[in-house]
Length: 240
Image 1: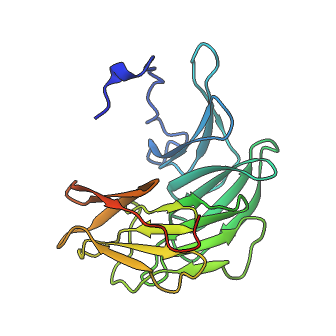
Image 2 (image 1 turned 90 degrees about the vertical axis):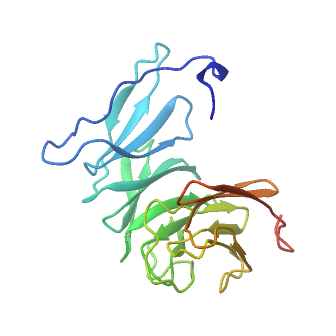
């Protein structure tokens, strides 16, 4: 647990449970920092996305973005390729690519499954998606295109979809993720040849491995009953 005293200032930015659309549930369902200092983005249960700015007096002010989703926003990711962009993944099976400077959606990726999480990759033009599929849970998409098929699609055979609260992590070209089965396993894929996991680690026998996070040479994993483990991570040959 991090003590508040370890931060120079803790600011109350107010509550965000008020729905912009009265007929829909309010509250924040996703949040991320942007690539521009002093700004962050939030997605809501009301299907809307707001961009927040923090001026010198720290009076946060939200602006509604022209992103149209028809279900809850489940993941946000800020990237910078040729400009500052914001990706929003939703339970409506779409990912919007919003150009912050142009103030408009410049691309829309439509899938057949709910979007749980969106990750940046080693290429600024691509993103890795975690989706609601029982065999191919992960896709790498080129954001400049709306291809008929993803650049890379991979996963493992499973009886249930992961759900939005299972979250993997990507470091260089290695992706790690837990799963919806109570086998307690964390699987690792090399994105250069992701046909099968190159390693499967049994971390929590009889329980779900829900979230993982890389930290240099270590991989941290969390179980559904809040147990944490740290794994010594050795990169596969050829991955920097």
